[in-house]
Image 1: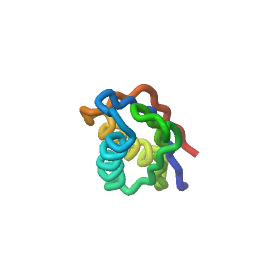
Image 2 (image 1 turned 180 degrees about the vertical axis):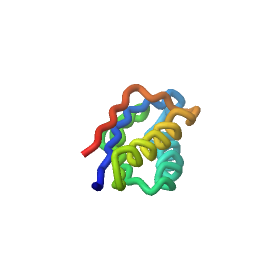
Image 3 (image 1 turned 90 degrees about the vertical axis):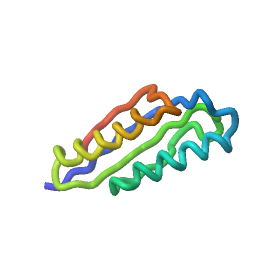
Image 4 (image 1 turned 120 degrees about the vertical axis):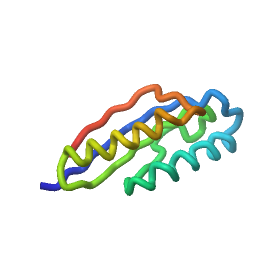
Length: 93
């Protein structure tokens, strides 16, 4: 049975001093996440230069595989030294 995994991640970018700098950092982060064949979109914080909220979605053959992929995505967020993960939630449909 197919599964859809959804990950919401809220981040803080302490070194960002402008929206331009924020976009530069987020572009690289999103490019690395997309290599895992997931969809990613900024869903909140568009006008804030130190915060962002993302929604990441993946379609998979089962919940375990979706969980594995989304855990790898979280690893990318957590290893990025220029950001702090403030909150995240994961669910499966």
